[in-house]
Image 1 (cartoon, rainbow, N blue to C red):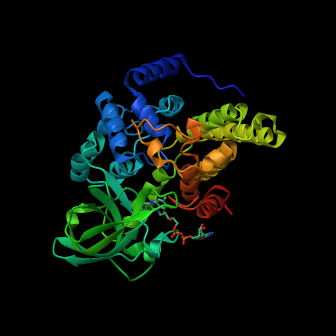
Image 2: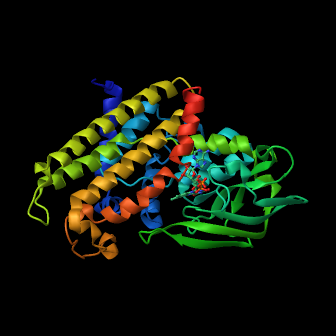
Image 3: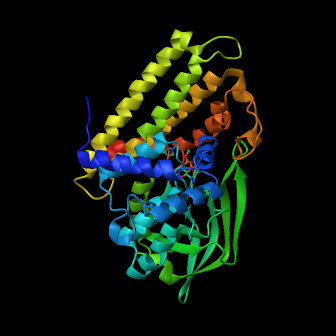
Length: 399
Ligand SMILES: Cc1cc2nc3c(=O)[nH]c(=O)nc-3n(C[C@H](O)[C@H](O)[C@H](O)COP(=O)(O)OP(=O)(O)OC[C@H]3O[C@@H](n4cnc5c(N)ncnc54)[C@H](O)[C@@H]3O)c2cc1C
């Protein structure tokens, strides 16, 4: 199947390429290429964010009325594809990809006017307070207690796996405001300042040694009730709406680039003096992966066609979330295989941007092992693959 783009969209593609040629520095490309996890470090993330903000392109999925680009789905697809092909970083999703769209859909006028411009400018950096030590997949069982005290709620309890809470100055959080009735009916969606007295952020280190997630403790933290999004005890609807944006994904271009890197590596002579391209088992894997990436590509097109008729992503976002998590993990495992002995070299300093430490082994694989470890989390974070399959079984297949 051959998909072609209109002249208007091809002209837009050239505009993107021109912008990337002018703006995307080697330092940013290196930061993206050597990033061991899903999230870029704060400094480079914000450097890229500010460049996009200056161009007016920081929020490709937001409507123009709220400071977004107002791009159509095809333009957004071209943006994702061309930035991936150019090796550009991605922006952190908690503000631009989750909190912003949630506020546009469910925030009141005051909340939109206050928070949306600050997300766009990068003045506010958000983290997501959903999961708790005993509530993950079964999110509605969450317990973090919010007691009413005049115009405030007082929070006590803990959130866990909170990505980048150590950088964030804001958190969107689900709290329990009522214990009676169905668990879903007593949840409230709140916005809070991370520097509120009583909040403590404790790091959790990944097996690869990187610090992305945290446990956050709340000890009598006061949050004004005006920071409730929607109605008290009706936060579940807002929470689910936001998750549809969190689980959107895809990025076949990103996978294609990883596959191209693998093909190049396979053609070079490895530590044993052999070439993987001469190993039929490995080339078979490469060919199968290529076909799978193409099928992800067409699934993306299919979802885009469906989305162009509706307003929010819906359960199809579960499909892309699962496909993307599986493919990311598969490619990272192939990369470790292709690197052979070199994959086990631990050189975190060589991944730092601007250093002049030579990589031991192929430079492309310098983050291979830590990425392999970190990507194990992608089939858990944002809702596990098993839970996504339950959603698809129920809402897509009607089982
Ligand atoms: C890297 C990373 C970053 C994260 N960032 C954030 C963040 O910023 N903010 C936040 O709030 N949370 C975050 N999370 C938490 C994430 O959303 C939860 O880990 C996830 O929802 C799973 O919950 P759990 O870890 O409690 O596992 P559990 O819910 O205990 O699940 C354990 C296992 O049981 C399976 N399982 C559970 N229920 C079912 C079912 N009904 N049917 C079939 N199988 C089932 C799961 O698939 C899983 O394999 C992050 C997690 C990771 C790993």
